[in-house]
Image (cartoon, rainbow over all chains, first blue to last red):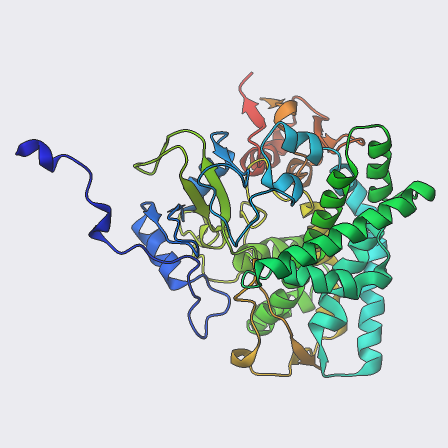
Amino acid sequence: MADTLTGPAPETAAPVPEFPMARAAGCPFDPPPALQAQQDEGRLVKVRLWDGSTPWLVTRYEDQRALLLDPRVSADITSPGYPLQAPSNGKNNISFILMDDPEHARLRRMVTAPFAVKRVEALRPGVQKIVDDLIDDMLTVGGPVDLVQAFALPVPSLVICRLLGVPYADHDFFQENSKTLITRDAAIEDRMAAHGRLLGYLDELMGEKVADPGDDLLSGLVGRVESGELSRQDVAQMGVLLLLAGHETTANMIALGTLALLEHPDQFALLRDTDDPKLVASAVEELLRYLSIVHGGRRRAALEDIEIAGQVIRAGEGVIMPNDIANRDPEAFADPDRLDLTRDARRHVAFGFGVHQCLGQPLARMELQVVYSTLYRRIPTLRLAAEVDGLPFKHDGSVYGVYELPVTW
Amino acid sequence: MRVELDEPKCVASGQCVMAAPEVFDQRDEDGIAFLLEEKPAADSLDDVREAVAICPAAAIRLVEQ
């Protein structure tokens, strides 16, 4: 009968691809070829996650921006259909990045002040000093060194510790536990235990701030507990979130960015030989776009039916938006697979888009500007002390990068 | 041309201040944006258009007078 032909094509017509997808061997900076193929096709497809669920995959720049702005999509991890990155206990203990407005906005606005552009700019001389001192240490010790341990991790860890009011002396403890928390393949028990230790640590630190408050962010939040605006648990969760987001992401941009530049000597030379802050700022935006280290995909659940790209996403269905592929969309960036530090890349979505866009981005930018404008100028003969193909890449993390980067000069 | 800023939508990302520092600034208490100049000079309009494009919350509009 004719009406039997009018229904949608059966979903079994094409196999559902697995997500996340693998990068190609020998192309450590490029998104997985299967993601690229989906973007070339342009339409939305379903993908299969570790738990068998099949959310929609959105790959085009404009489609991702539209959805990430849409109040009909939820970032709440407990919303029906939310595409989980790893096993969860069904509760949100990661704070406001996994909440919707108005509660998300209420909590976010309590921590945004120190990340405002002018406040961050005032920290620049202190960051320059941190960077110069660490480079002095590397030059004293001599190469080869692991750039991750000697430089890429300490820079943002020292900065976020100072801003939050966390003792840097504890960095081994929180770096180790953060690493477990963001490793996708770690057992749920291990991740929960790591998170529990970090929450306990922050709670203890809050006690010290009550007795002896400073002018740091954590002391300010403790004041809001005393006024009844926040619970101790809220503050511990926010503290863990900021501590983790403050050092893991920037550290990976420093190490992976350096590797990308060493693999593109003409671009390395541009940064090494310049003292133009505009070129440095432009280089930071381009490296953010090109590397897009938060590569697990921004994840949301539809609260209502949403029509986009000729497809209806139904209420209760999940959506995954990998920003790394959006930042390689030829409709948004000409010749997108080329690293070109002189292009205007400011419209990239490496920090996400919508109300959840990274609140630490002015700080991340300033740190990277100081690092990229100093490291290669002071060590102009910097080079890899290992084969690229043998480097341990973070394929298993929710933030991409390298676990180690042996360099010498 | 006139700039409109929908303050309740602002998420304090600071993108507008970076794109057009002569037109936008942020409040001390929470980083929420405010306008320094409602009717920007002609040579600031490209910067404002960039701010409109990169504001993650779509909180900025540039409207004809």
